[in-house]
Length: 592
Image (cartoon, rainbow, N blue to C red; front, side, top):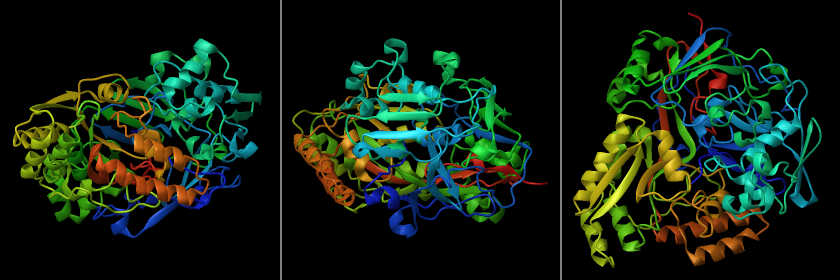
């Protein structure tokens, strides 16, 4: 289950006009709290379009009222599990890393609307040979934090790293597409990374400014895939291995001057960043100071009461603590400080290891046992999102509403017992893994433990550090966990990256962490892959969703909303329409 980017195609209509995303409401200058999150209810959609070479030129459009100067404090309970660009695979980390990192392409946000443009590149790319060849030209004047120019060879080296051991948790598109492989496991047998196999011939760099990608099969989605952090350059002389995960070398408007793991991260201006080369980012604050370890409730109280650094503080990881919801709703001044919006195409679901919980009757029982209402209440009630019944989000092109196994939000123990009675083997124990990022994670685990106990199942809950959860559950190795709750999304907002890249039985465990497999679904996906019309392909994939969900590979939970908070002197804080968190590249410190 991947985390997030966006999809576009060079030829099909969906590519340039219909990459639909949910509206994300701005916050900062007087925005209110979210009421409903789904596209079906909001009635307002955003369309991600492909920008031109002109759109790709810097500087980024100015934000009305913004000023330079000051220090922004970003208070998050947990540190980042990864900063290495080739290991980043989550929306919040994508968004934050834009402060110091750049990619071939990226999303330009103007008045809350996303447009894909060239970032390092002069445009979103040029295809030839029926989509098998893509060419990018780097802009002039882009430099590293030490002033040395960014070269095509360094972009190539960064992409080559995605094949290497240790990078299994990042996006797998470059390895699969450049080698014509079905999954990463097969790809790395053909090329094992720059340290092992040297030069990757599928990427040519005829000069310091040009990259030519050669794919065995046509790839229409390269422009949007090139916005992923895995498309960031890395300088070989600065590649410190595991150390690069703590302090990558900068190409963006800020550089990392200090990173004390699990304590703090300090950014200062990169003197060699030139705004005229960058149509994406601003550099309004002088400095960003990230702090880790303080409970979200304590930070939120400081922000709402203007205590300490609260007036110039915001969060990108933590959400509005449920304990403060009533207070916020009663107080308009505090309500102004809530940054609310739909979390793109994100859904939150209870995932089931289908190779461990093999009996469909047991999976159906889990579906009926899952206490959606109680779990959502712990996570913030309606602020957390709307109850889901489908595999994909309403933000996905062609989405259709269905509910194959209707159940009350509180669950249905009697119905669960009926399905357990039909199971071939009695189930008395299951295991549940979760990341210990906040007290709510522990509380949700206890809610699940209590709910499963009502049907005679002992649920053994195991809390893991965020990094361990990511590496163990999504890293591809075997693990002893049957269930895990996770917020995930398609890699771009059409169904093209959901079933084909997560639910084919031949995929490795990195791509298919729940180990789902159904021969009929495999056959249908092979047939649909040959459909040339993008709209028709989307419709077929959405229809196939119901076949998958009849097997209950997971339990739908929420179409995600997100509500965070910002200090009264933080301007420009708005939920990024792609990444679903406040866009730090747009924030500024207001005048006193």
